[in-house]
Amino acid sequence: MPDRKTVLTGKLICAVAAHAPRAWPLVSGPVTRFFDRAAQGWDDRTGAGSPDHLAGLAAAVLEVDPAPERILDLGCGTGAGTLFLAREYPRASVRGIDLSPGMIAAASAKVGLDPEGRIAFKAADASHLPFGEDSFDLVTQINMPVFFGEIARVLRPGGSVVIAHSLGSDTPFSTPERTLRRKLAARGIVPVATGAAGQGTWFVGRKEASAR
Image (spheres, rainbow, N blue to C red):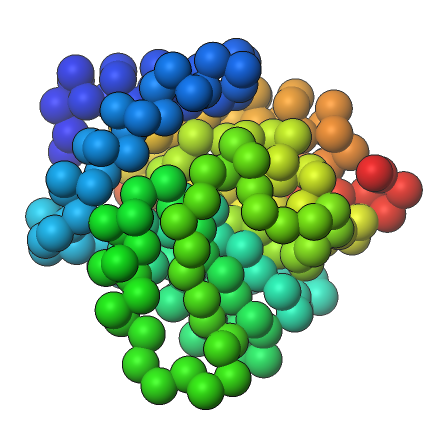
């Protein structure tokens, strides 16, 4: 379990993203440098990619219907969740983005022969996604600050969003469910289901067909 200082720091960063996104540039640099330094050996130290880490995501995708064709995994880190989604949806194209080039390098190294380019990773800031409107059927994230406006912008009407926290409320990078519900609803994304799996929690929303 992370120590209290780590939990409080992560929650503060998530609060900035949720409630004061214009201030994000003040913290994005230190966050990038932290994860660049931490990228080597990240999976071994944190259990990223373990059944416990992915339990919330695995439970949440059972509520996603229909099966997506284009998936975006935000804050993908070393790619554990992204690769899980690629296995779960073998016909979908899957894109993983992360602020940290070091994490993206580690994720890219996990992709074997992929002649169709179905899986791809890119260093990018989730507060300013390098994708057009209505680009994805499913947007996911595990243990990541939530950039509500960008999620709503790139998610097509009828598409789903999955937000998972691998340690529930003890996850450093986590956003309270009440905040998720309120800020997503303001952008036309309605709750579909929530739950707990292993030590984690998950939330699924769907963008209303009329939302833009």
